Every structure is written in structure tokens, then in C-alpha cells.
Length: 443
Image (cartoon, rainbow, N blue to C red; front, side, top):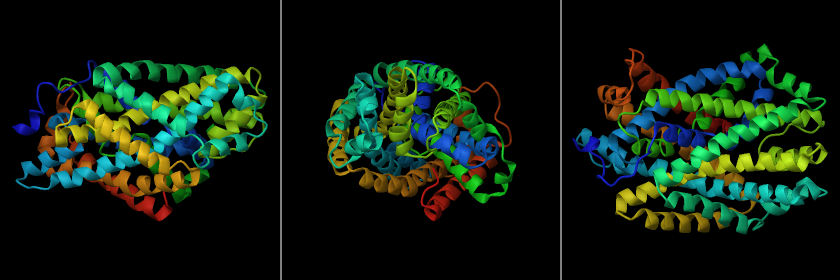
């Protein structure tokens, strides 16, 4: 059956399960963990927020294992996978729907690359002392995030990303994630220990972890917990599906999905116990989004003993998270061009690089970038996840989906598999899409 035969013997693959898991963790750990989760945790009831968040995270795991298994079964990304799903039903046109998650991934990637350029600039600024020496952190960030304020850094971020990707899955993406992801966790652990010693940090821990149970009666707590869990797992019908297409059939996608969810949550909690207590220790504003990372945190490091050193550790760790996420996003359009037009990997990367640079130049202004990212994350990303779920769990069929997820898993999938994937996960994904439109974004 051609859906299980792949695109040929020369297709690259991950060399190890660890490398695959670290790559998926790298794709999941990003800005949503670092500048949004800590704020949401404190905003919606502290530890009480974790109850709906973990509930929706567990539901999301079914989607992660589905995207991994879908890619592995079809041995290709969204374009080819959707086409083969339709073909199983004797239908044409699946490739048309597969374009949506690919465009969504590229759309987020071109904007995300600008942000990674900012992070690179701040990492260098922390190393040279320019960032902490700036009298006004807001003005410092404003110059970088203003119109054409970080072109060279944006291009360098893209250059690093595409250079790694050029070496392929095993020798490029897998190898780099094996270094960057452990380094990310180690550096944030160092920061967490340092922040714990700051006078006044305890108020930040109270803000984060003292449960305010009344927030569970607020529908917004559940709405934003759903959005946070969904987007944090990188459910988009693109990157995880593509990484799954490079996975060996002997690997356990059930265990892999659970591991990714656990470490993604640990990364978010680590970010929370570093950022919020540090902000409280120095009496600064607990904001969300770019100001938290690029204005508030630099002010923290200015007042912190040995702040220059810890600023370097912080922004280097954030840079690693940004690069690994960006590689995942870019892999979807690169693989799609290879699959659709038969281009070499280098040529496909060249095409995506040209598009990324051209589009990124238009998005250099922070205000324009914010509007663009909102549009893509509200209208395209959840739609891509919904389409991938429908294709795998409905179009391919419940028996096929169960068989593919079961491959490599030692235990037997229980009776809950079909109702949880076809009805609960697909239903929740549709709700994310609708609520995102109503609320103007929930993740």
C-alpha cells in the first residue's frame, strides 16, 4: 500500500528516539512557554490554573500522537499525507487541504524569525554589556523592534536556522536539538536557583502557586488554559507531522507524545519560577508578551548582582528555544517543496529562505508583526490542526489510526482511543478555532 511505503529509500530519518523526542520538545518549547505561561498562571488563579491546563494538555497528547503517527504512516508532510488520506477513500484534492497547515507554519515562521532576531540581538547585547548599560530598556527595545531596527540580526537568525537544516534531519536538526534542549533546561535551572536567593522572590512564588480556587468558576480561566495547552504542544498539523514522517516504525509515538508534553510543561514551569519571582523581587510590572522579556527582564538583570552573567545565560537559553522552534516551523514548507516539486533539500531551503527574507522585511515593525502573528495564529494554525486530525482520525479511518499509533507501542491501546481522538480531541480543536476568533486569540 503506497501510503505506508514512503517517498523512497533515500529519505532522511532520526537516528534515535531520544533525538526525535528532543526535536519535538524543541519545537514545543518556545515563546508561549516563556513569556505567556508565567503570566497566565498568575493571572488566572495561580496553581488553580494548572487544573484545567493539565486536563487540556492530556487531551492534547492524543493529538500529538496522532500527528506523529500520521506523518510516520504516510512518510511525508501535510501535502503528501493529506493527498494519501483522500486517496484511501478514492478521492482527489487532499493536497489542496494540505496546503493550509504548510502556509500556517510558514506564516508563523517568517514572523517568529524576526523575534528570534531580537533574541539574538539581546543575547549579544547581554554578552557585550550594551543591554544592561542602556539607561532605558524600553527605548533600547524600541530601537530594535522599530521599523528595520534589526534586519542584520533577523538575517543572522535565519542563516543559523537554515544552516542547521541544510545538514538534514539526523546530522542537522537532531544533532543540534541534542545540545540545545539539555542546555536550555540546565541554564534555566541555574537561573531558578539564583532567583530563589533574591530577597522578595517569595511573593512571586505566592503569586504563581498559591491557588485561588474562585478562578475556576471564571470561564476565561478554562478558555485561556485550553489555548495555552493547545499552542504549547505545537499542534498545527505541520511540524510534528513532518517530524513524524522521519520517524522509524519501531518507535513508540504514544510514549514520545507523553514525554514531549511532560518536558514542555516542565519548561513552562521553569520559565515561570525564574521570571515571575525575579520580577516581584525588584517590584517591577508583571506584564505579558514581548515587554516581559525585552523590557522587564533586562531591568531585572540591571538590578541583580552579577546581572550581566545571568542575562547572558537567560537570553542564550531563550535563543536556543527560539532556534529549535524555528527549525520545526521551517521544516514543513521545506519538506512540502521537496515532496511537491522534487527539489533537493538545498534548493527547497533556498526557496523558503528567499520567501522568509522578503516577508520578514515587511514585518520588521513590531506593530505590523503583532498583527500578522495574530492573524496566522487565530485563523490558520488551529485550522491546520483540525484538518490534520480529521484527515487521520476520520478520513483514514478509526482502524487505520489505531493501527498506526499502536506501531512500536508495547501496551495495547484501550477502548478510549477512538472516542478520545475522533470526538474529544477533534471537538476541542474545533472549539479552539472558534474561541480564538471570538476572543481575538487565546494562546
